[in-house]
Image (cartoon, rainbow, N blue to C red; front, side):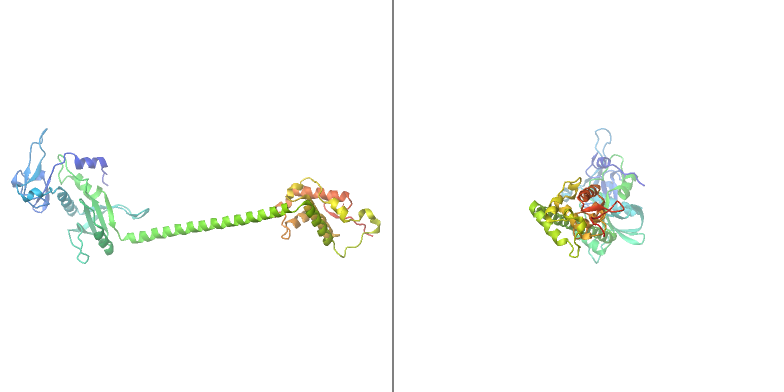
Length: 399
């Protein structure tokens, strides 16, 4: 709505062609040096010490003195700092009271905004009205639509913490407009200059000292922070649990590797013989006389049948003597039933063995290794091909 002045322009407005005292107080209102008559007839007093002023209007040509006020010769006036800051402060309040319009800043807490910047009309304005029950006095109190609004002009100092605490306790909206270091005068500039009026009412830096929405916004921010903290704690707990599971798996893998390495080849052979002797079913019938001695399996012959090198044997990640002994034992357990390679691999993946994973049952290298070993047993006349050509059976002559 109003053109925003740059920082450099406002600094120039404040510092360039600065005079000691450009404002006086005349009949209760701020008057610029350009508005009054020369000399004592200006009828002005100092806004700070309330002593009489003299209007000096010199030559405005090259090298001439700027127009300005001076104190009347008085011993007490020698201690006055000039009154310029008090004049600016008073002028801003009178400007607000005269125009009764103000731009309010957005209501924001961190990244959450509850209301945007907007221009409001003020129904009535009272200057320096004391809030009796809390014993504090804002620069101006205005009726904004249906609610009160406290207005502070920062010139020489900001609102002190005690006053701010009282405003927050009353839960009243209070805005602070910053005049310090930004307001000044230059040639041709008067208090009625529209640029100065627009700057005070709409463009000067301003912020909320307190707003009733702050309670709700602070609660929302606190809830967001709690949620973020809980989410971070949950992620940390999940990461720790995951690391613990990994550590347990590594320990179990290391234990199994150590157990495998501990067993020597002789131990594996002895284990094969023991399991073979105990795995033969007690009701297994004796070999048919037609088979002869060359088909009678003994421990000596079994020892020679396990541990054979076949293609894909390294895919088991176990010694050949171990898994081949398991296959021979599996064949004798099935007795007269059909023996298939997938069923044997499923047996190795069962919970009682867990030598391979369920995904490895169809692994081509494992299938190749078992089939190659089954063919060796077939050539040794321990197994024979079944009628379907995809399975095996123990070698027997049914009589």
